[in-house]
Image (cartoon, rainbow, N blue to C red; front, side, top):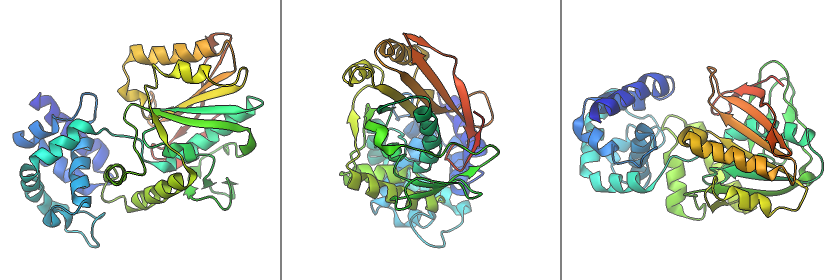
Length: 342
């Protein structure tokens, strides 16, 4: 276990952290050679990315006021943070001192969607869904975490080159550079009949602990992302958006069956199916196919595929069968750019 987990941390340092988080890159390399910290990281729940979970658990405690010495290395917690080079021994000491508090978070929490900038990509996909359907549209998010991506129709998006979408007085303004063909912009808000999010472990935005966990998942150097997340949390609380506790696989048929007969439905997900085993993913598809006997059904997937960048795929279902998926776009994982292909 420790050898494989050590390589997981080294890979995280090289491929994920190094480009934008020198602190996490430095710490991940150090953790890879530390049996005590690897054993602590291994206490995360099965299927959860252990580097992300360990760093988030520590970050959550720091956000709660613990460890001022370690907090001095975090750009999210101070101006002019100390350089990463000296952070590893301080991080190790903090983890050993707060071992049980960290373990409690690792064993009870999960990595959930928290990047609201992905709304810019989801919005473009939903514009295509609306263009391909008629009448009311019911939207279900699978793996919704706190439901922040359900803000997709409320945010304003600047796609660059004068391409503006969304309400000018929206609670958030996002920037998502359009590469090549412009994405569709038109959303008929009146056609959005309902929005619901399902998650096995949903975040309650009225809970201070849950809000802190969401913020802890943002890497320390990503201060803009943190500020955007705080704005999204405020907007979602004001709009009354919430995710429901439920199994996005097992409970999906009942949710779809409860919608008005004949009205279109779209189930979407973003960076969640990498954590779902293939047999369960097949059940998800089967539920959508079955529902398409009674209504037009769509699946919008914003996930990593076989390309170097994530893909936005749209699958239409009718008469119990799925049509071939359409690749609408490739897009940066945090919604920084979109390359529309449809």
